[in-house]
Image 1 (cartoon, rainbow, N blue to C red):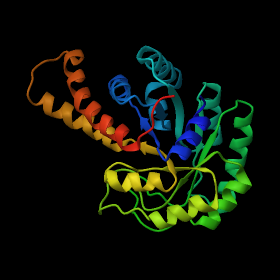
Image 2 (image 1 turned 60 degrees about the vertical axis):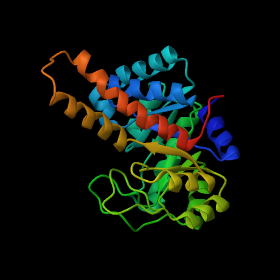
Image 3 (image 1 turned 90 degrees about the vertical axis):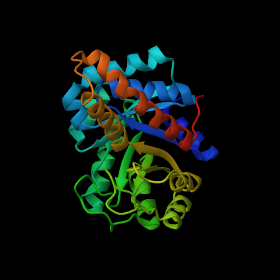
Image 4 (image 1 turned 135 degrees about the vertical axis):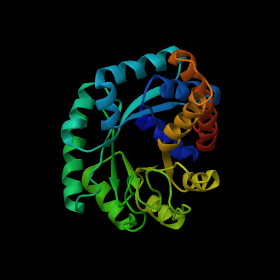
Length: 274
């Protein structure tokens, strides 16, 4: 089953794929163990920062080997590809899906850049995700720039993109104020275009709110910040209570609470393998 087929299946079933970023062997292991427990497909996301940190070949080989070792239905996705050049590198490296994020550019420039990537990806048989509207990134202020149903339809019609991350009140990183998703706006976007819709910035959003978004058209839910935060908090606490210098004995203990977090997130989104 391709990623596109999986997302369309979720659309029919009103479930969503949990798309998880990973940063090292331990966070990758946590994702794998949790998905195995939840009997869920895995969508492993890499940003430019993670690619620069691990190296694209190492990261892809780690991900592919983990998928094989755990016997899971799994895919590798470029998250927030900021340039056409990075997308090309990921296509050449064998990614199953790519995202081009030109959302901070004017509408027409976003369309133009996304069209280039959609055309590039056709030769690889790889689906493309784009973003439309203002989903605050780390350090940016929340609010404003929400996606409109009309713009979403125009954008999808003009680009032929396979999935679209929409701005409906979520933000990347932790929230400075309690999050609130504009569900009526989401429902209107879903009615305006049949494209698969994506929720970025799910960390910290109450589970019932995420599930309401899934019921109204979201088929992919991105999770990153809570994974890093859970692992690092556990690791810091361990380091304060041990003199052990063998990281092979210390790091695995920080994986356990990360697995617990992810199992709940997989159950929240509801997608099953197959």
